[in-house]
Image (cartoon, rainbow, N blue to C red; front, side, top):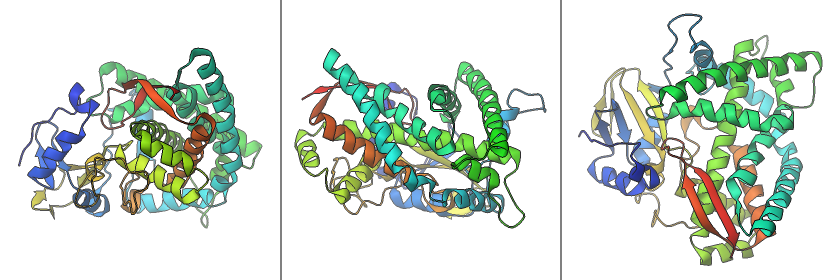
Amino acid sequence: MSQSLDLSAEAFVADPYPTLAQLRSVAPIVRHDDLGLWLTTTHAAANDVLRDRRLGRIFRPRAASDDDPWTVFDWLHADSILDSEPPKHTRLRRLVAGAFNRGHIERLRPRVEQIAGELLSGLEARLDADERVDVIETYAEPLPVLVICELLGAPTSDWKRLRDWSQAIVRMYEVAPSAEAQAEAQRACAEFAAYVEALAAERVEHPGDDLLTALVEERDGGDRLSRRELVATVVLLLNAGHEASVNGFGNGLASLLADPEQLAAVIDSLDDDAAVARLVEEMLRHDSPLHLFERTATADVELHGVTIREGQKVAALLGAANRDPAVFTDPDRFDAAREPNPHLAFGAGIHFCLGAPLARMELQISVRALLRRLGPVRVVEEHRRPTFVLRGYERLVLERA
């Protein structure tokens, strides 16, 4: 059944969940003719789309020639884990996972706690001076980018530049990016790639105890990442590795603060690691940081009562999946103690987020540190990003409750 839905409409972006619930009542998978997409509406359909090997990540280049402004954007995606399929995906993921598995993530824990503490000192000073503070600007945005800098061995003084490049690139993942957004993405890709290439060349000459050095050196037999694959991997790590953390933190914190009774219970349980872990999973589920993940049929696929023809695209709507009442009791309610919580915020199948352990660690540390330092707080001003695919806040202003 075909549906008409404006994914950029202001009311839908502000709160997509009632509309997604209506779509779910129509069918598990619906056709959106305006976008030329199939859309999943249920947890089961989204999970099947993410796991079905006949539905792949098929990247279509934008550049018409080698000197086209889209050239760098194209290879940053074509040579990344996210936009490749086996056997290339298998090879890239094995090499990157090998570098990750050297213990870089867990070794970062004390430094993540230190960064959180330093940022919270600045946040608290502004809160004391102004009686309110934007938690996105002062805490949620800088923390994961600074952590990625630490992970890769990039200068932490560059965090704002990296954040700006990343934001310009990920705007291309929205449904209809403007001409200005496209031009900004082209510039950001060229500048970001040059930056990473220079950083990687420095690691060749002067290895360090960081993930970038591990990526430069990682081998599987005689195989290693090519220059472009290395750059594409680092850019992907920054883009995916902090967008989920920024938006997951802001969305989840806003959901928690909307329920003062639950907030009080959470503050009382901050010493319980399991309780903090459950809180973070619910933050990721209740208002997912990523809502749409696209796949392309490599053959005709019969799925949940529809036929997705070869070459057609289908999008797993992760936010709709994570509010499916067939899987989650009272799904629209934020439940900090929810268990089990089989959300799909990090995807599923071979493209399950490689950085999920890092994102979980960051969120557990950052939300625990914030609530320990500030105690009860409330939202006094909020501004959503005008985007659906990557859902988050531009501003989330807090004051002490």
